[in-house]
Length: 352
Image 1 (cartoon, rainbow, N blue to C red):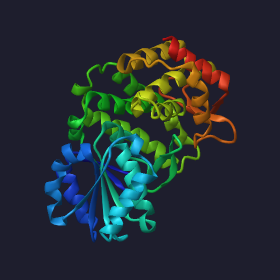
Image 2 (tube, rainbow, N blue to C red):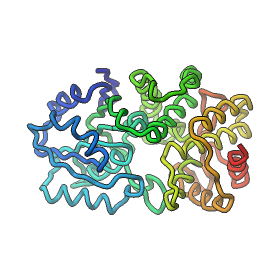
Image 3 (cartoon, helix red, strand yellow):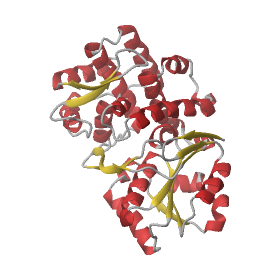
């Protein structure tokens, strides 16, 4: 088992059968609750249940998917906690992907002004991204994570074996964040990833810690997203808008699928504003389209995208904020772009 020590909590990487009993010994609680959705109840709960028997955990199951990351689902979680008389000395174990981790942590942090929680991320996306940094929240009025707070878990337990439970589409979605980390901070990793063609054969035991280390450095330098942490926003200003809009259609996109589009668009902006070499734009574009295909963006949806971007929580004043690449492996934050420039980036994507 490998441990990545943050300032206030550890991330244990390895078999959850080893890390979970050890963690619970260090986190005594009056009641233990486990938050899961129907997928993690079926595929992941059986993997941890034997380690929890003596704690008599209470399982809270909610519907899966970003569409349920809202106040109504939080009310359901709070209701179960209240019914079972949970106190602030109880512990909530969030078993699932980014939606479970974000919403479960938010629900725990606001219940009776704060109860403790553990994160057991079961998707690649949550293992390399949502599991670190203490950002919690829910979606509101199509704007992702617009209601939330910063609060750290007691620990994060990352077991690459959970990735075997994912569909190819879910695995590919999470991989987008691995790509993003390399593009903003690690040229050698980006060059290595370009040789990876089969995600099922990937060496996740080395890729995950490397990706987490990048995010760890950024988060510890800027825990409340005042400056450097905005580097992690690369691909997300446009990507989140596309994802939020698609949620209201018959063809919703997974987070990583939308972020892949966003990274292509924002790489194009990087060539226009930061001098990202055209050869690197081509590498990024070809690699992402080979992994994620193409989605036809409708020009009629551009105003909706721009409106959602205008509500992004990282904006300052009326300007739409971006993190852009002067070259692969480096990033600059607090860059802005106007509607015509953003439209050109969307057109560039559509022209591929």
